[in-house]
Image (tube, rainbow, N blue to C red; front, side, top):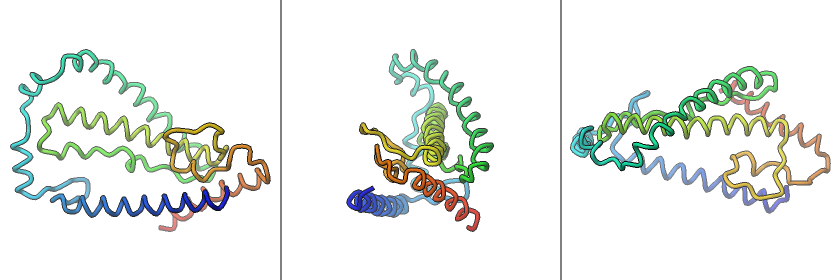
Length: 201
């Protein structure tokens, strides 16, 4: 990877850290606190949320007809989602220790906190939890796959990849053959250091 690309990646990482900090500061002014697994709002905010809540009967009257037709297909996806969840978890628990790769923490990706929002009725909460599960599961599986790719094949594609995982930017350029196997071991060493750093915390 040439120096200019590395500098741009460093700038992106710096900006992402600044963005995370700005988001945290904004959220800290949103009148809620995280207490363990619960999210607690100030009483005035909670009262406003309750007033904004739409009853289930009224909500069903406002649902677009096409949503009823597609609901079985959408919720039918829970079967392959759950199967993927099971298989990808078994994979990382059995293979990552062999590779010396730190396991991905599932709870960092699958977050179910919309149930604490009082302005959502029970059906809306179920919808939100399902979406949170699906999106979180795919991000969880993506990170597991990204660590696997870093271990076995940290090479970029010749064609532009949309939505590439966070590790991809640091991979070797397409066709960068010089000292490939030595560089591959360096990528594996980085994974091992991540695991060691995690163990020392």
